[in-house]
Length: 207
Image: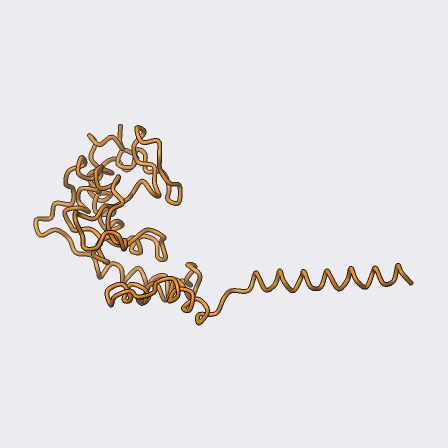
């Protein structure tokens, strides 16, 4: 009898653990997510509130967990391409030295950065390895060592690099990379400088 009771207790425990595991795996509802976000940012002004509202691209990426079906994939790419603004003079590369400074800078877009006291940085090293001299970098994005050299420093690659920095969804819809140009994080000149960091043969990225 005692053995039977033990078996029943074990079965009940197993069922409760399975239920808990399923509850942990279940995705939270939109209302639950919205409530957590609202609680995390109390007393924010209108500018910050707007940043918490996803645009069409983010809404689609969220809905499909960053794996959109083919038709939505192409819709996002087309929308991203329509946002890209090119320099009036047609020159897509600036100063790699300035680009390296921007890549090292994480300043901007944070509560503590308002009102802005200097230019926003690209914070590229937070996700990428770029130069062999820099030993502190993130790995969310791929290594960019030798980026331009691997692409033969071609004009096509320069243009593609500019576009990807401006809005990475033009290359990979639902990319985790920020939309630096589309969202006004960086200016056109800053984007050109980061393109130079990646594509200039003299840049340490390509040494």
